[in-house]
Length: 375
Length: 247
Image 1: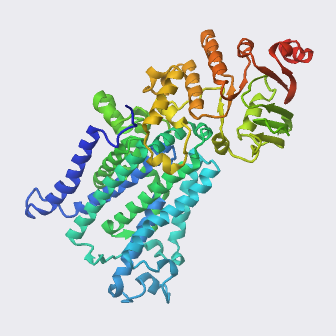
Image 2: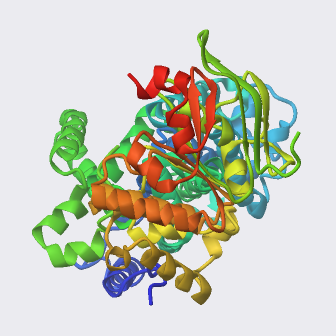
């Protein structure tokens, strides 16, 4: 009897389990067990780098949920990421306490430098970790809710939505660059000392942050799978292709889109909050419109409408970026642009689509036939 | 106003840049009625459907469903939930979903986002979906993407989707356009059978098909009603011959 698609097929669970073992057993094992001078030992600097990649993968997953399944090409996901990052950054700033350059227990260094006398209200309570974490989800979620409510209710779709999301992240970038916004201006927030009492630069802390990121990515993947295999997933696919028709069936398409858009923004905020302690800085550059466009390229490269492909695309493109910006830094942007053009022209279903073409049996399990190639 | 009418339109006017698509249109559909609407291109047939389903707001006039619901104030989703289903001229099934999933989306019931997220199909719904598949003759195509169906099969699927939604009033916009003669005759039989327990309004050009339906006919012309009656009475109406049939 048909009961709708399963959360994951057998092949899907096998791949998921293999990825989980690789990320949560093999990598931490190689980072700690072999003697420090052995060739098997994972260099310490790679752990936060991997953690950074997994944050990007979470971003790509969040975009694929709305772009691949609901046709919402948001080019402002970087804004939600940066807002989540700032929430974590504010918590980390409050942990510095008297260890700052000016030794002020109450105010971060940049506020002392600007001659401010008291902590501005947006910073209140950010010394408490649970509050900061809730805010890392709530702030991006509220922005997405307000923005999405206005856009979806007015039936702004397609390229117009993409453009206004770009404008949103650009406007936020300009605002955060201003010193009197109270978030550190163009220097952003940095010089973090510790998180939950653990020294932030210590290898054990970094490994823990990496592992938490990997586990979060796995949980977020299953959450997204749960959504796209539910009836809501079918509604989203249907409205991606013929929104007016879905409205006539009596569904609120604006409501369905708003739900996934807000959820996607919260996942981006979570990715930002996990990213900041691992890279040690958050500044307004994270709001740059180009960052948000790059996320769309990762998803397109991996395979839109597949979730797993988005994660794969983020990892592959960023590994290539790390290697190439070292080997030939000036070439990277050209390579990225060429990659996007080639994928659009030759691989409309991305890497996973290519795998499906080369191996039809494996492909059918990995790429559902319905993952459309239309933008 | 008539208290028994299922659909009551009175003095409905819609203009686009000065052109009156509907000009003080009045129409009363009784519960259980099967009604055919004909008229030349530009007579306002599609605009009338748009007003009833909330896609177009009239400039003036009344549109009331079941005696209490003011259709000029409700949006499309709310009107669909009230029990008005519409089949468009062009088949608009969801090509990336299977035939089965198309029907699943069309089932009546709770349409909220949270319900759609958490609900899984129960045995009752599965039985109902299988019955619908059989009724429109698509049981063997249940797992195929709807995009692979022929034009006629897409029209059938769409009628199945209307039935799944269990509407009180069905609006069919040129249901047999592009169908073969055999498909057209079968569609007429299906519509007559469906009309036994619900109200149906059919807009059609094909006069053979209109005759097969054997229902009361309303002729629209320049946005208002020109004539109303049996197919024979309408075909012999001098004004109708002049503006439409005699061309």
